[in-house]
Image (cartoon, rainbow, N blue to C red; front, side, top):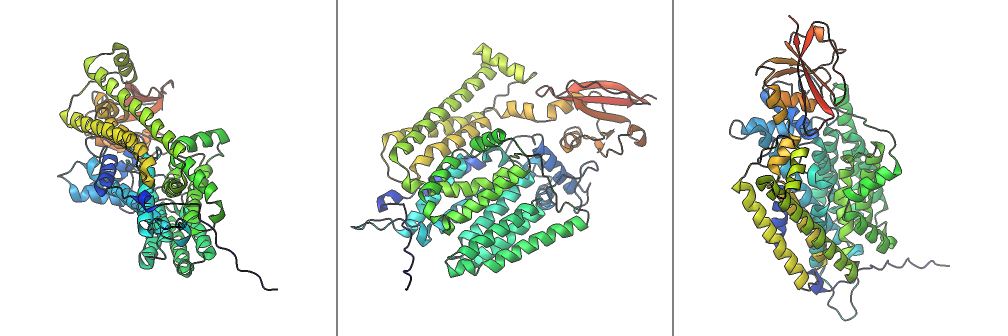
Length: 564
């Protein structure tokens, strides 16, 4: 008896040509600019990971460390590979002395964030062009054209990624995780573009996994290679199956590079496995970190459950699972969870064609209420910082950041006013017009996140700088340690060592050497303690001063001088 051929799976999407109206490119570029540019200018490197990574880059640019072994005060980076530090160090070296080193280090990482946004858009576009992702043809015609449908879904994915809360701060730091995220998103693009752009897909796959291996994440690169091989093997498309050797080659190359770095004593296979996190802690992290993409991605998996093996669902799903697995293995590490955000945004975009009107309206009204209240609170606190009214709010600010001095700046105020006006115009447009575009339900979440980030990085930037920078603390330490002195800080974190060098102008030695102060020739010993810890006494040294990070009482700096 001859078996009947398997019936094709029906797409759950019913989309008309009217629903794939294009989001104006100027509006899309404005969303991206409002998301990427704030936080790039006018601020110090913030503790802890941000300034620690900057310290390794700065030491390379100044020639204080070998390019094959980045370090600050003799302390090597924990993981992170070498490629991120090369990237930031080369930018500082090329732009000095015209550009501030902190800004010079941020420029290539801002471009990486732009690349992540662009790769998410193009990955979604290519996946939406596949036959299985296309909407059902309508009986009397009028269904969406394939390219227009793919473009509208890709616009939704980009807006979903901008709306993701987890990417907001971590995406604006100069840390290796941003380069790792670029690699994982580039790998997703390679899987998505195999049918329409095979040459670009092969190049992207080779570059992606090797970039991750050189950025301190070879284990996740190998995991992605294995999962990508499964996607290629299970695909019904010949072009995707032909992509399998390139995925395998990239996986082997990534593992070989990590092994080579390890053999040379560099940061290659850096295992950072932590204790198993509690289920509640992991759940809370995922819920806020992946909002609002996670619920939309879950909706996609439910409605497209009969097509889980198709590439437009399988590829982003497996890449997201790799990010979840890495985060769990590292003890609910939020930085490892970054890799899951772009694929979750891709999955969330495929929920837009089947999103019910009531749910879309709920997302709109929640976004209007939540982000308008947040923006209003930021403005009220900004007014209290400069006028002292309301007095209770001003007192709370003074309590949280003792010694804060308000700094008025038209450069910060004008963009904040423009951003607020644009937000009110966006809210009025969305609530007064009935648009059928697929991306309509993600305009307000993305706009609200971009607005709040803009207000934080303009109105609150002086406050945040004083709270999260080592500059104020090192200005106080300068009264006890002459500029240019040698400071021995055994066991101090790289963030503090960088602050001592960058803000204080000291020559630091952070190598622990069994914590024996007698082995150093430096005239000053600096020890970092917990907020309530008692300072020890060391033979031949006497306590000269004590300082605490006023906005973080768990940190105490004790300065010793030689007794003679």
